[in-house]
Length: 179
Image (tube, rainbow, N blue to C red; front, top):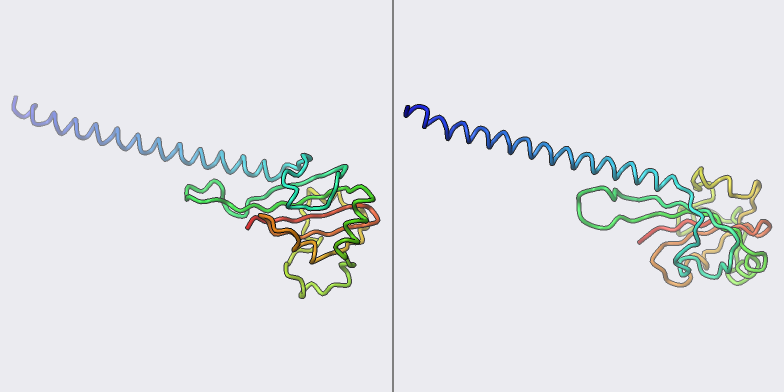
């Protein structure tokens, strides 16, 4: 009988070890499922073209009471990472301005034809060709983009700003990045 008593602690230890392995495996599976769910949600959010008004007017000053907006957000990092810290975001959008606001913007910030600018001289690397495919349908068919470095740098905000204005179609293409 002494052999049976000695075996019992070993059996209990083995059972406890098995339970621990199963619990850890379950936690790991739950973490993988959570990360996968987060990634799927992020992809769906990034694919969505939003039409809600831009909530931070300081990011896009002097655009007035525009009639239409389409925009998207994209994470520049991995918001689903288990590592602490914020994720920066990039935003792109197309705004249809009122004619008077488009003209006032162009005059106030000395917009010039983008075609006349040497891209190497820009403080940024964004061009209208960098627009996301889901936003292309909201751009003018044959835009004549204007650009203003002054506007991009005006009024401090929480984002880096690059905009292109098509005065003829009263369309503003914007690209914003958190910083």
